[in-house]
Amino acid sequence: MRGLSETGSFIKILAIYLVSILLAGFLPIHPVVAQEAAIHVKTDTSAILIGDQIGLTLEADVQHTCNVEFPLLSDTLTHYIHVVRRLQADTIVDGNRWKIIHRYLITSFDSGLFEIPSLPFRLKCANNTDTLYSTPLQLLVTYPPSDTIPTIFDIKDPLPAPYTLEDYLRIVLPILLAALIIFLFFKYLKKKKNRRSQLAEPGKPSEPAHVIALRELDRLKEEKLWQQGLIKEYYTRLTDIIRRYIEQRFNVPAMEQTSSEILQSMKSFVLEEDTLRALQELLLLADMVKFARELPMPDENESNMLNAYVFVNHTCERQSSEDVITDNQKEEM
Image (cartoon, one colour):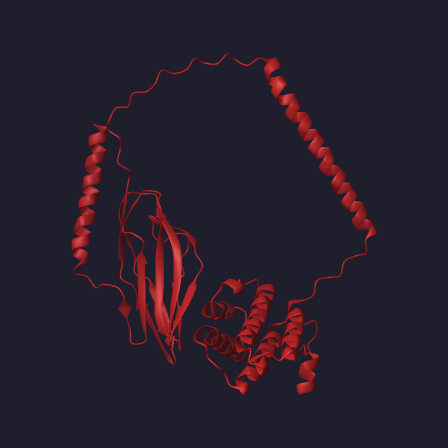
């Protein structure tokens, strides 16, 4: 009776899933397209077994002058659908358009036909702001089919004889002896290491993030890479310096984020619009150079070096009320 009940439940769920597919033919189909952008939300498959993990892909195809804020997905997408983890984001440049891709792994531990709700994408182009919504998706989650064929098992082996105290001692004593030897060995190494550290001179304290960043900017400026035609290497080095500074200063994973994600993260720490604008100009032009083979003018190369100095100086941890200024900046002043 239990097998028939489970089979009937599976047939009902499958029937609901087929009806939803037929109804989906009369609904709007992805992508949701605005004048400046198109968004796509899709899953690797529309039906899974309970506990399986599949990919959920969020895509935004926008003009390079626009900024897209993706929906923030927590660990629970719906009551029945859960987010396992977020995968690494990707950006594809095609002429004057950018395709930004975010991927997640999702799963479900309940059976049934569940809906992935409409997700909001916030689009900013020039002075216009709009919100685009994706079309809801259907996900069918089912139990694995139960095996209704009786299985013939082999005759069980004889039960082993019970262990005696001597048997336990023969097993436990060598383990305890080995553990004691390992413990004494590591204790000796630790004592020897502490003795060496006491004799050694105290180490040099770590430098603040802005000191390291400003020194690296000075070194990059002295190398004159863009003057030698090494434009892409110049902007790669320049943005890496700023990304490492952001990670050390604000504890933000900037080396793994896209430019738009970095700018969004910095809004929580940087309130001055001029400082954010300097960072935005630097990152956007660097992306155009690295991905679209843009060739900036000499004054743009110099102004973006200055933008890097401005961002570090305006966001550094100051021990006094005076701004941090490097030797190269003093010469320019």
